Every structure is written in structure tokens, then in C-alpha cells.
Length: 578
Image (tube, rainbow, N blue to C red; front, top):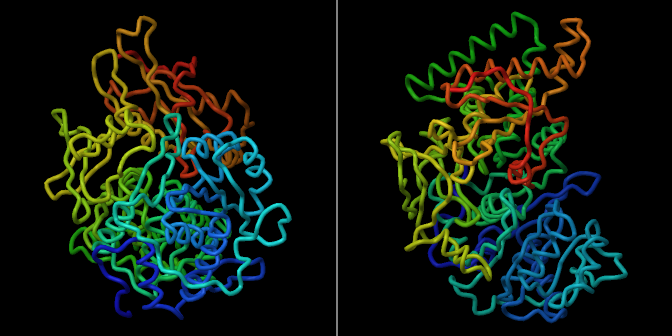
């Protein structure tokens, strides 16, 4: 394996990282994108030239220091070129979530006092009308040629190479609006120093090489993908391949065709990957299934007894046949991952580790060491990060707080919200968890989601959801506290459940029964009751309802819990009150 790329650095701003990487890796491939005919490559030199073209376009549009520039597009090299170009001019990036509605974009543009929007032709018709509605908004630029209603971002064929403006580490680089699982989004202000310190700390834990190739799946406007899937590989001399989409078949084809070595994702992505592999294995002949099961057991035993990853060799053929043998590392973030899924993928030779963080921390706070990972943990604090658990109960569970150079400067134009989360230099994450004797952290839920029962017991809905979701009949679930009428007697536990209709259909065909609404309802009630037997009495679901549609989610696949907090359910599970 070749020597590592850019190792931990001192006092670099984001533009300086690109300048250094261009010097070190100029002719190497920086990015690959699919143009409909196949993957096309862009070198570090090519990408730097793209950045200079965008700088030229922004200067022509009148961009000044401190101006806010919204970026709205699918994952593509032009998004990254705009991101860097803005920072060369000491402007501030405001990434927009492509899944939001125009009125939600409007709120962010107004709140951030954005001056210019850079978008692709795909989103131009929806975003362009806002120019006439928002006073601060001057112009809309297009990443694509052929748009008669907007100036082309890459029109300058001979851009002048410019040096970055007098950008300092404390200057704001981005204002990222939280995805809103709990309501109105807030603008998180991250400085150059916040972001580059997080890159530096991440590089101290992950061994990355110029030969690595990141498959970019998550939306690049999200902090996890932007820092770890965009800036980290560019700081390491690695390549980024932009996936064509999130369909399982496309992902596998893109991994195979690009020979991707590293993939970032959220738990839902890896859970679907595990389910797909499991389904494929179950279709194999009995003898093959027995051999796979025995080999799987051996892989787990070897890992447990002598800490050797036998699965990488034992299951190479299976991964190769699936088109995923090139992957050497997968990193899950955004939410805690099922330990069962993590263990299974690691036993099959897919090295997968978890990390943890928030947009407010640039975002990574913890990562599992690659050679000493724990499947049920989000890992240890990154170098330079201080973490602790405060207000812990007798089980050691309390709120996780952190401090370090990657902690945000505050919320844009929102001193009240800033003072509620930043106290004496510590970021109060709102996440509940505990830390073991080895310094590994475990997330149990969100403080705001905590359910207090009639008996005064605390229930973490995420724990109950994890248990319910293990049923093959349940696609996903949402557990809430249902208050009593007088609001003084605590809450009862209710669950909204989305059935896995594909699994229902398969089982109904096997059992030769008619798939009716009553059959689904009765089965779900039985499954919820059966799964709840794995929980203490006070954690068991008392009411359940069946939801036909998937829950509305953020772009990072988190359920927007606030949309369902006032829903009422009426189907009792048969569980007695405790």
C-alpha cells in the first residue's frame, strides 16, 4: 500500500488545504462523476481550475467578503468547486438541502441574509422565483450551460489563478441549517478552524491513502458527508466517486465499476445492505447455507478470541461475487447503528465502524479505532476533544457534553438558542449516553425524546424502537410517550408501526393465507407483544397503530419525530398496565 497522503496539519484554512493538495497530488484523480455514458475523471489540477472559474464568476457577480452564497444541487464536482471558490473570496457558504420545499429554502435564504444562489438546472425553476421575493438576494448563477435566465458558472475559459483573501481560522466558513427533526431549522456557524481541526483529528484516527476512493452517497450539504466524504479525502489525496443514486443495484454497480475502497453512510443504508445480503444467502441451497453459517461462526469466534479479522479472507468470495470486494472500510454516522448489523457485516469481512457527532461539532466527536472497534459503541473521543457525561442516573446514563476546537461559534442571529447549548465552553449535545471504562461512548437516545412513565421510570424510545424493528414484519417504528388527560401522571408508551409489506406478502404466500388488513393488524399486534417480552415491563408498548406510508424523514434518513408527537393511537396491544 502506498504512503499515506496529507497527514495532520497545523493552522490551515480550507482554501489552504486545497492549495496544498493540488501541489502534492495535481495529476492524480480527485473526483469521478457519471455523465450517462460512464464515469469521467477530474484530476486535482482540473478541479483547482474549476474553482478558479467559479471565483471568476462570483467576482463578476459582485461577491464581496462576508457575502452569503447558497449552494443548491445534487452531489457533483461543481458543488465542491463553488464551496471552495466562495471561501477563496472570504464569503460564507450556506448549503441547501435539496429535499426541502421552496418555502423552506426561502426561510433559510432570508434567515441567513443570502446574497447569491448557485444552483443546477434541476432546481433552477423552483429556486429562481425567490429572487423577486427576498430583498438580500441579488442573483442566481447556474452550474449548467444553456440556461438563458442565469449566468453560467464556468463561462471563463482562461481564469486567473488567485490567492485566497485574508482568511483566518476564526472566520466563518459555512452556515449549515440543521435538518429539523425537532422543528424550525437553526443556522450553525462553523469557522475554518472548526472544520479543519475536525479534519485533522479524523486523519489521526483513520488511515487514509492517495489510493483510496470514497463513494459519495450521502447528500453533500450534510456536515458528515461534507467534512468526511468531501474535505477529508481531498486533504488525503484520495479520490471521490459520486454515486448515481441510492438504489441498491446502482450502489453495487458503482462500487464495482469505480473500485471504491471507502463508503460513508447512515445506519439505514447499512441495514438495507445487510438485509439484501441475508436475503441472497437464504436463497442458496441448504448445504451452502450451512457452510456459510459455520464460516460466519468461525469468523466471529476468531475475532472474539484473538482479535483477528478472519472474515476478510473467509468471505472474500461472497463479497467479490456481490461486487463489493474492493471496499476496505465503511463508516456509519448520523445515528446509532444496530449492533447486530455491525457485527454481521464485520464478520462477513466488511470492516465497518461507527462514529458520532453533531452539525454543531463540525461534525465528528468520536470514532471507533479501526483495529479496536466495538460493534455497539460510537467509539472514543477524537484527539483534542474532551467529553463527559453529566447528570448521570444510577446506571451511568446522562447527557453527553463536549468541548474542543471543532465546536461551533454559535447559531446565526440566535443568541438565545446558542446560550442554551453552549455553556462555559461545553457543547450540551442533548444526546443521552454513557461511557465505559475503556473510554468508548454509547448513545441511548435524545434527552427531548425521553418518556417518563406513570411509575416515574425513564424510557428511551430509541431502545424500544430498536427492539421492535428486529421483527421481520416491521419495516420501521416510532415510539412516543402518550400523556394522561391530567398531564400529571406521566406517560404511557405508544408505537406507530410501518409493516414490511414485502415480507408480509412472501409469508402469506408460503402459508397460503389471504393478505388482508385484519391479518396485518393482528400480526403486527402479536409481533409488538412478542418483541416487548425482551424488554422490562415498564418499557413495553401499551398502544400501537399501523401506518401505511413510510415516516417523513430528513435528507439523512432520520424520522421527523416532531411531526408525530401529537398523533393519537387507539389500538391496544394487550399489554397490561404496569
